[in-house]
Length: 572
Image (cartoon, rainbow, N blue to C red; front, side, top):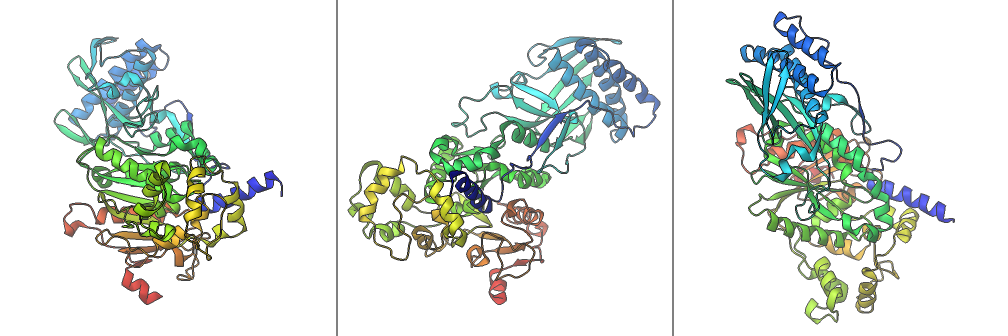
């Protein structure tokens, strides 16, 4: 078989396990377009001057246009003060604020540093903005793109969701990369939703940039009104400019070359009052695979108010015990960086679920003894080899993890990994040089295991998905730590044949766990993390089990396909 054929077969294998490629169809596309006022505006006399100012601004350079757009915002603002629910006034105001931000950008003005006198047909206005609280919040560091100028399409954005209200939704795109993004557990470049509002006091116009994750309302005079929010646009812009999905296959074949992409990252500014939810992707996938779920969950105001979203990304060619070790290191890191954080929720898809399971498992030295037949102190290993194996094989549950949601997780492995497709895939994964001396040192002292396949190299991710893999078998002998609830979401491809079902990659016998607080079977293939029913189930779980919530307002469990552990046993 030629190398080209081998690579093709590997692609088939990892696509099956990963459930996402994004190569044939773009996950997201963003094109700019001229912004247009809504066509359904009322012909109200009080708003006619605002429409004329906006029309005049279209044919002007940045500074004259700024004057016209500011007057349009002023006129519509006046109507909103009298009638805060006037939709036409709101639409004109939002449009005028968005154009004002564009004018400021084009004229290279910085009212947050230097108040600017703006000449208008009705005299001068003083345009101001609050000084940034720190460097990160300095608007000068970002390109501010009104979302009404963005046409968003793609596999993950077949529909566009935004919340109506007051203000101009923007995408703030960092103009430079943060050199300390790792230490801060942030994106290399910021893509953030922001809403701009302008408040008038006589001839003073104050521009404010509101973080919709921190506030969902704004005030006009004495009226408190909902803020206009567009959270999808920033996600789409990130996917378009960074194209994270392109790393998926590369990080399987050559994990060592992408070692620096293994990291835990926050998707919004850290808030000690919100519960962190960490998403962990599977084989061949990247953090991009969670975009549909995150985008959908963020549309719920209650979830936005109570949760903050993170992701853990890693080269998925690594054996998953090693990836779990990397996650534990990062969990230690965020405890130091963000003391006092709330306990976290892990959501893992496929192999990401297997990694998440190790965070709620007290293995102690049980797996080590299974591998070597001796306790760690009596096993003849030294230096970096002992440290790496110790961190990978000897571990306890993470006390900061309070709940886990498993999606399409092969807890007991998948026969695809041990079949011909899996063997081709595993043979093409390059062993990181870090593992070569480790394997050479450990192989002579491994306890013989005639049931397991013998390797002449360190096991990689595909190997550790085999049902007879020694690590997989050892983990399944250890129960999940009592007191940490977990849930399962499992695909059956719509066949309704559970418990004999499969998502096409993982059979039910591998993904089912006794003791789960809930188990939902959804009409999905292995990519259930983007299935609408699965997303709604995650939403239900997050709303049902927050740290503090009045029991009377908790949503009721869904009946369709939802079973308790007892009900599952009855079905079986």
